Structure formats: structure tokens, C-alpha cells
Image 1 (cartoon, helix red, strand yellow):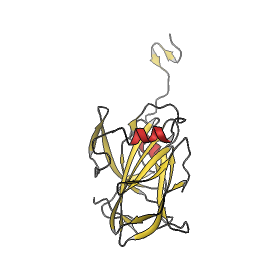
Image 2 (tube, rainbow, N blue to C red; image 1 turned 135 degrees about the vertical axis):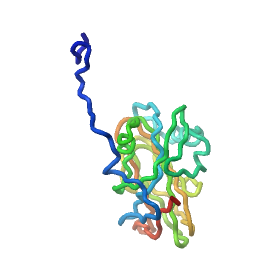
Image 3 (cartoon, rainbow, N blue to C red; image 1 turned 90 degrees about the horizontal axis):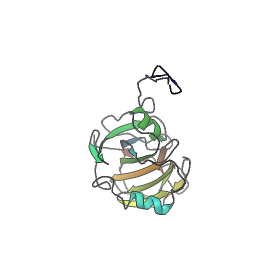
Image 4 (cartoon, helix red, strand yellow; image 1 turned 180 degrees about the vertical axis):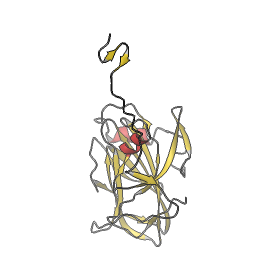
Length: 222
């Protein structure tokens, strides 16, 4: 008889508590959403995590991340798709769903997102998408990002921030060069990769003095 069993029946405790993404996320509501008081973007369309099988984070150098994110296509049109809540894509013969969500915190808890949906929550790659709508052009801003672990970020199709190595999520950990948020819609895309440990990210825009830029709303068109 194997350890941990009696009469062939497992004695391992079973957690029957239903998993949920609450209180970390709520379903995105129709209309627009302003950033929080510190300028952090809380409304995102997140793709269910892609299991990557990684058991460590030590190899997340720039060459590896660029090859994994840019030179490897996870799904068709990954840098041009306009995902909506409920849209589906197939990755490695597995159907994954996009979810339009509001984060209740300033940082987006990808671990809690994956865990709450009963998905793989260690060794994951996550795609994030959002749309920032500005009433007027805003020049000289910087995208400020933190992530656990490595990540890359694009604004209107231009690569603007890369975070490499095994790192913890810290606000404003890496900032972009000076950017211009155009009048109207500006598309942000991000990819976050992690092995073991908690996964999350945060994104905001800051001005020349490092103060948060808040003169915009998030508009997913839902």
C-alpha cells in the first residue's frame, strides 16, 4: 500500500471551495474607465494563461525574451488582433478565452486571474491588451511598468518597454523613452512570462516630473 492512502483511497485533502477571480477582478462594465488616483490602468483584456512549462526564471535575458515574444507566434495576428470579451484563440491545440476585466488593485494579479479560472498558474505566459483614449494629444510622457517576472510592452504597434531577468513587480520599475499619446485611441499590448512564483504587472504613464498622467480614459469599445 502506498503512503498517503488506505485501502487504495487517497488521504490527500481535497479543496472543494469553488475558485473565483474575486475580489481581485470584476467583469469590465460598458463604457469608459478612468485610471486610478495614481494613474494606474485597471481595465484590461487578458488572455487565459499559456502554459510554458518553465520551472525557473533565471533564463529571462533579453535574447530569450525577444525570441519567445517576437520571433515565436503564439497565435495568429497576436500583435494586431483586437480582442473582445469572450473571443477565443487556439494555442498549442488548446482553446483559450479573452476576458475583459477591471482589476480591483493598482497591480493586475495574473496569478489570481489564472488560479481563479482553474488554469495553470505557475509557468505561464500572459497576453494583455487595453485601449487608452485621450481627449487631446499628450506629448513627453513615459510608460512606466513593473512586472513579475519578465515582460515586453508596445504602444500603437511600437515596442516601448522591456523588462528582463528574474524580477519582482515594483511600480515604475522600467520606464520608456518620451512618448506621445495621440488624440483618440492608443493601443497598449503586453506579454508577461513567469515560471514559479506570483505573476502580476502594473502600467501607468508619468510626466517629466514623474507625476502620474491621468487625462485619459480606458475605452475597450465594449
